[in-house]
Image 1 (tube, one colour):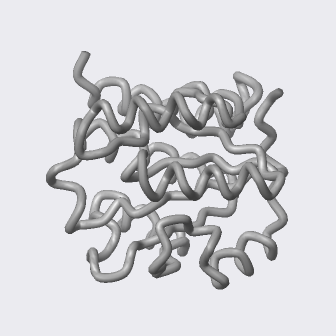
Image 2 (cartoon, helix red, strand yellow; image 1 turned 135 degrees about the vertical axis):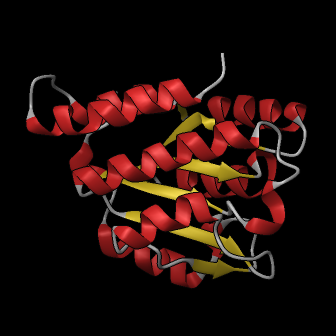
Length: 189
């Protein structure tokens, strides 16, 4: 099953100021989510951001890209699963994606519950495995395994970027290639 951009949407879950400092490998998560947002913006994909109530705004490194692209319109939610929020469901149904590229925190709570609800409601979830995390590594790993068993497609940020691009040599490819190279250089081995 290949990810197609015409039916895809990026969902960024709860990457917020009050959560991020204690997240396992937070710098890697921010770099990869920022790259996904930049690519979605460049390719014209819909992007939806959620924020758990009372935990602050989306972190500045991601929020600034969303604002530059006119995409920072977060759904503030009380439920752990964003799909349980009426406003989120209305937004997602309005864009009609069938493929949801999912990233964010915490993997074992809000990301997992959102993914499970999306899968049950016939969305194909593509979990950007290197763009999700939790406070503890084990919680994240357990969530990824559970989501994989539930039917989510597990892929890396770079895999998803190249799947969305589909072809080398295009203007889009040339425009996004520096972003991919910069992302690689920012990540520690």
